[in-house]
Image (cartoon, rainbow, N blue to C red; front, side, top):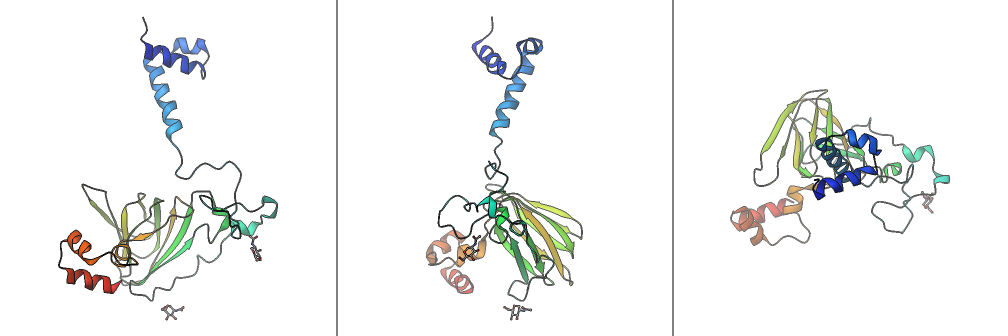
Length: 240
Ligand SMILES: *[C@@H]1O[C@H](CO)[C@@H](O)[C@H](O)[C@H]1NC(C)=O
Ligand SMILES: *[C@@H]1O[C@H](CO)[C@@H](O)[C@H](O)[C@H]1NC(C)=O
């Protein structure tokens, strides 16, 4: 006699397969199929699947939604799906010696709701894109010029540091949410193009968020968290 679970599984599957085929399937195969079907429903995209061809951002709308409201499709033009300027070198004359040029939904309205975006990052010799995370996106990067050390740290409790030196043409991925960086380890100039799995990936730069919060996180909290003297925290907070 069949147990209740198997009985239920066969009836659930009857919606997908004709009875004749079902009878030919072994119990194990049925079970595997149900598991596969269940997972196919659980495998939601990070940004919800689009219910329309596109939803070009209307920057003038005052309606607040998760993303940006759609422009009238009849008024959409080719330029709404277009951005020009990633051939231009970013200005790296700053403290860190790096510059990110974003192409997010703000810069390219056609990206709205599509769950993808792009950046160009320029690095002066020994320039650093400081440790940061993207709360909403995985990042995949390819080196167009130069030599970069890249790295990320896995979450608690391991906090494993994973790092590699990349050359021109190399590709590296930073999993969503993990703290990562890139540093130019050559005396020449370096540039990468990276894609991110959100129209608006967000960025939290660790130093700025922790020591440059506005208003400041009380110094005694940071002194205890980092197990250093309060004067060290004061010094760091003054830098950010
Ligand atoms: C937004 O408003 C400005 C000023 O009224 C107008 O020039 C522009 O075309 C509008 N943009 C869109 C996408 O409707
Ligand atoms: C680059 O940025 C620096 C610092 O903000 C500025 O002084 C300089 O004029 C900029 N250079 C160019 C070419 O825009």
